[in-house]
Image (cartoon, rainbow over all chains, first blue to last red; front, side, top):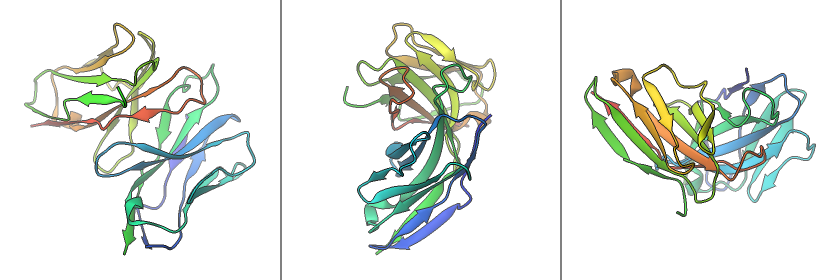
Length: 119
Length: 115
């Protein structure tokens, strides 16, 4: 079974600065997807960024980028020029790409990191 | 609809009662998921539908939990003989199809409190 670990329960950053959220995972599969989701107080999970394991290039979405280290099974999220609206709970998630696997079609989430942005 | 819709938004029920939580996925999405999120934790998978059938129900904690999707659109999560430990946010999500590259879209959840 796959596991996802976020070792930082809480992080804080000053507005306009950069912060990095850590995530590690454990899997025996070679083909999978990794995601970062943001969950504000409204409870809705919002997709921030996704990474395909077969791609070596790190994904980037505007101020959000990842550092994907497949061999180390590490997937960190970097938020540049942090804004007050970035404050939320952030979850790292794993999804199998193996159509024949038992975990196909579902996300496995980490425990989450609460991000506070100070003005 | 524009997004995944879940009702009720909040539900308080007494221990031992029966509860139904409804999910209306994004129009045209064939895949539907239920997750449970306890306070301060990440969501945990419950069940995954592809069309009308449950493709994976390995996350349902026990036989008090059951979910249906009779017409391949709206789904209902049913909890019998509720216990205080069932208190959580129940999140529904949908995606366009079975393809593993499809993004999964979440609703705002139903917050269940069992007293």
